[in-house]
Length: 381
Ligand code: T4K
Image (cartoon, rainbow, N blue to C red; front, side):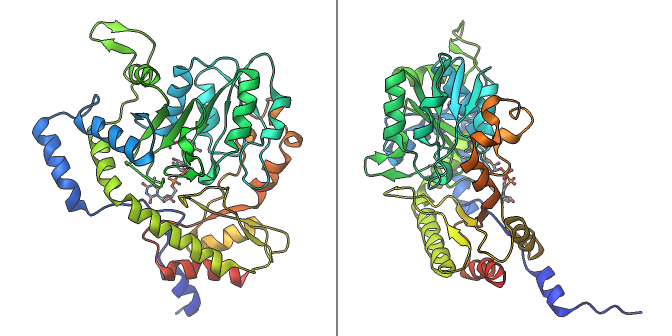
């Protein structure tokens, strides 16, 4: 017996998967000379020449004074908190990747969740003061999707209450406001160079710091606390970036402007194609002068023909792997939901956004045909 499968079903199954992102990879042949140099020198790690070169090159590219490379963004967050000797309670956002709050738990700190602003989905400064207690020592906001936080308002509160500010800037590589690099705000900013990020070193991260002394402390902390062969000043971790990752970062820097330009074009194309689709809202710019288009979040409102989750399932059925960044909220995960600040009624804006958001695919090599395929799933409803 022959079973006939409708041609439409076959065609859909044969369509290539489109993922929410794909890492930007320069031509392999361009990486080989770096590898030859590593093979020649036999320096594989421990802050070797490529590591040092990348730190300098990133300072120049990003327009910041001091930068310490780390093995990934999570270790960079954990180390940043240690570098400033943060204790007690830290005010943070529930609307982020779970690593933001995990970095606090790894340091024995208590996260205090505060709701987000409905436009930027970043920590709402108007709600921070009410969450401050005598135990509060710091604020950890996130420049979510690379959209800048209200850095001025946050700094004002921090100054008034003598709090430190550590920005989780994992999404904010290259973002600039009118005042220059968004990474220059607060006491420290932390970047991620994970494979899924705008600038990737396979795995990697960095801490941006304002002075050489803090950078030196971070450099000690990421190397077990060693200052010299016989002196250990803190219970540091092994957080060093390897020479292979650093070399790859140097190569990536040669291609980054091209990659950012490609993202800009895709962002503009989506906005043009999705204009006027009822119930679909593209998240606006967060006031940045130079954006990095790290993500393309849309909000699925009640005016759309499907719920957010039904649209998510429909995408999957069409081999388009969109993601619900950031659902569930961090405050809903088991290790956080018992905290008083994790109550849903305390986080209504974040809860609503987590129920509406879908991040559409965006990456430099995305073709116009792929963009059209993504948009057609939405338009078919
Ligand atoms: N703070 C914030 C605000 C963050 O967003 C993150 C990381 C951190 C801190 C911590 O930084 P790191 O310690 O990671 O440096 C991904 C990433 O793993 C994570 O780095 C990122 N945030 C988060 C938002 O997204 P998943 O679980 O969504 O990743 P995954 O493996 O599902 O990848 C998404 C898609 O990307 C895949 O469907 C296909 C594509 N992909 C992924 C990888 C890893 C590739 O094509 N190649 C790859 O190698 O978390």
